[in-house]
Length: 216
View 1 (cartoon, rainbow, N blue to C red):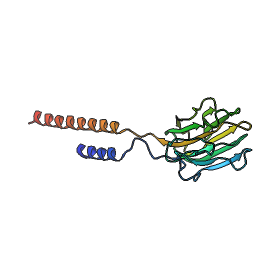
View 2 (view 1 turned 120 degrees about the vertical axis):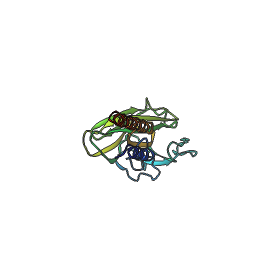
View 3 (view 1 turned 90 degrees about the horizontal axis):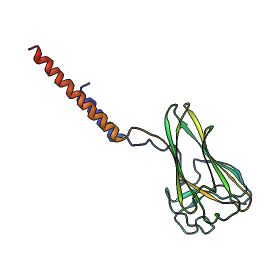
View 4 (view 1 turned 135 degrees about the horizontal axis):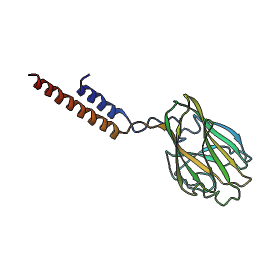
């Protein structure tokens, strides 16, 4: 293949290649309620459980909180007392691939003064990604979390958020912007590769010309 053709192909790849692959999480912003997610467990507050609320509106939680918009206009709300609840979905990963898992948490002001706390554990398969408590999640604002993970095998993994809360009344937390994606070469990296190919092609042309002249 001519070097000009290689450069043209690489240029097309640059135009088509984003910085990250598509989000592997279905409905990570909860715009479609709990669609794509499974739930398990419960607590002692009647009619609560894990639910999805609208953000960016007055009294979005039903307890007087204004929750600002994070990713879309909805978020998952963990509000149950004395709860053991799981929010999960299956994701397919490829062995040896590095993934970035990110999400955002918001501790409500209405629950900030409640005497009992919570733990929110995040796992990917058998790997413990993170564990946060009501003592560490910021109250009244979204806090972003991001972690790297290299899949040990090609298979389906369970992405799971486990919420454990204390007795009535316990503190509450919201989850939004759940994203799991694999990194791919940045545009700048592809551009450097193209420049390198161009330099190599130029050197080869000059070498061929030089050899031709020596044997003339």
